[in-house]
Image (cartoon, rainbow, N blue to C red; front, top):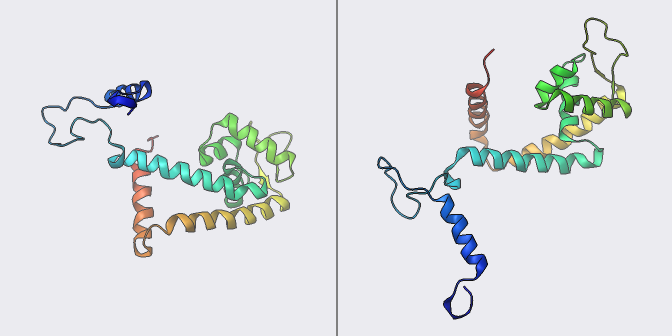
Length: 181
C-alpha cells in the first residue's frame, strides 16, 4: 500500500483485474469461504495442471535437444520414422501433433541436414515416403537418450509403483477426448 494508507494506481488496477476473475456464486454452488464465487480456481483445475506439465516438458525437451540442434518436432519426426519408415508428411504431422505445413518445414530442414531422405517424385499418388539416413538414425539414438533422461526426471515426482497407472490414466484421458472417425 502507498503512503498514508492510500492505494497506489497499480494496486487499484490489480484489484480491478482480480475482481473480474471472481464471479457471483451460483445458487447451487456448495463452496464457501474466500474462493466461493471464484471461477476457475487454478489450483484445482486439472486442465491447467496438464498444460503446465506439458509446457514444462516442452521446455525441458527443448533444452535437452539443443546440443543436437534438434527441436521437439524434429525429434518426434525422427522418432516416428525410426519406428515406421516411409511415412508421408501428413502421417508424420498427425503423429507429431503439428500442422501439415509445419511438418513440411520440419522435413525440409531435416532433409537439408542429411537426416532424412525423400524421393523427388511420389512413387504412388502424391505422398512422398520419408526415411531416416544413417546420420538421422545416429541423431535419433542420441536424442532418444536425452529425451529418456528428461522423462526420468519428470517421473521422479511419481512413485514408481504408481507410474504404470499414471501412464494408463493419461492414455485413457487422451482416448476419451480423441476425435472419432
